[in-house]
Image (cartoon, rainbow, N blue to C red; front, top):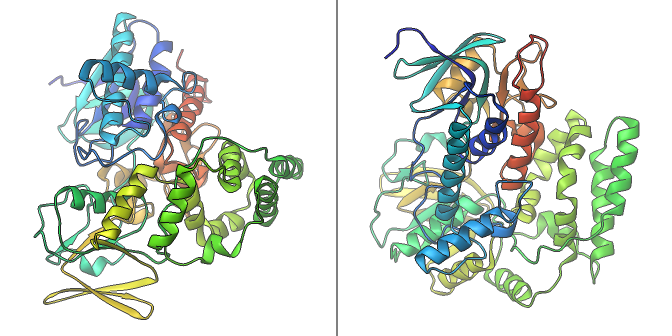
Amino acid sequence: MRKDPDTAVVVQIGRGPTGTALARQLLPGLPAGSRYVVIDRDPAATHLAFGTPEPTHLLNTRAAKSALNLGDPEELQRWLTEQSSATGEPVAEFPSRAAFGRYLRDVFDQAVKQAAAAGVVVDLLQDEAVGITGGPGDWQVRCASGQSYRAERVAICVGMLAQTDPFPELVGRPGYFGDPWRLPELPADARVAVLGTRLTAIDVGLTLAARGHTGPVLLASRSGRLPRLRGPETTAPVPHVDRCLRAAADAGTLRLEDFGRALMADIEAASAEPPDWSQVRDCGPTTRAMLAAELAEVEAGTERGWQQVVNGASPLLLPAWQLLAEADRAEFFAEWLTPLLVHGAPIPPETARRVLDAMDAGRLRVLGGLYHVVADDTGFELFAEDHVRRADVVINATGAGTDEAALRTEPLLAALLDAGLLTAHPLGGVRIDVSTFEPLDGAGTPVRGIHVVGDLNRGAVLVTNDVIALSFQAALAATAMRAKNEAGVHIS
């Protein structure tokens, strides 16, 4: 090991979807002789969302909408077609997340090869970044192995954080598992309760089914709402939303109530029948009948006005979020985040069919109104409104953590919080300057030369779990990183 730290133009921490998108943006613009360092503690991890080997774990967007390249939306579709030619396997409309993970690795490897051919030195370090010290133009990134690099700029692309345990008192109890991606073999007849009813929870249920689990599986949450189904990708005009945002831009602020009314007006205009707005937030847990009816609707190719408007309005969420006042943002997270995720992160029809099969076989149920879980000597009790359910095993699948406690589970982020280089965002993740993706210190001043990209920006940009949104974030961050900042640091 060299005694003196290596020097790089950029040190990038993490090479998942966001890190891959950022690297492919930055590497082609670097002059020959530049050094670009990528640090990732486990780039081929099978316990991560895009490393899962389970064939039933699918992307919830079609391949045609999941390319990690804003300028070439057909890239993933072509890659899948090439893979199909080599393996003979059919091209899936909704590819497995394992296939998407392989696509990411191929994209990253190709970007590195092209950079090397242009004379750019790319160092790939399998290690864990644990600290960043120094200042603008001369940051030093220290790794767990003792290796360190000096850099003009540092990009933090660590992806989603570990799950936050909704009932911390269960941690350490036999039969409780806090990581849904590291499940051991369970007794086949065990009564399993999965905390959560969205994408990760469904994946857990499908994993157990694929393993031949015969015991009952219960998906439980406060809402009991499963995601809606992904229908056609068509869009509807959103003139009311457009006018609302133009008026808000002129006024310098957006009211959540005004945006909501504009969205409702566009949905009503796009719908064949007047929507029942009481069902958006208060329809109760998803039943077998509700899921079957929606599947039949999607399989028939029925155009649904609400989904067409969601598709059409999705590019406007980032500018709308920036115009909302802090109080309105907090109200949205408290009252409307679950409906957004239910409608805005739908599941493929194939996944819905598997869920219905498990329901019909009596192996899977959905429970709403969950408010407490306790452990005793013989297992667990789940309390949901007037219901009490018993379980032998409880699996936490509530989604990635976002609060300061979750940030502190990562040694690097904990060190940066303690050093004042990061501050927690009240709505999740860290506070950033959205024009440069630089974190804000305790005084609200951008930390020049450090850039945060990906899910850590949840509170600042709202949508961070969508491939296109992450690609857009990476493109914006790359543009900011190429620009000369106040300290004179720049990437050519």
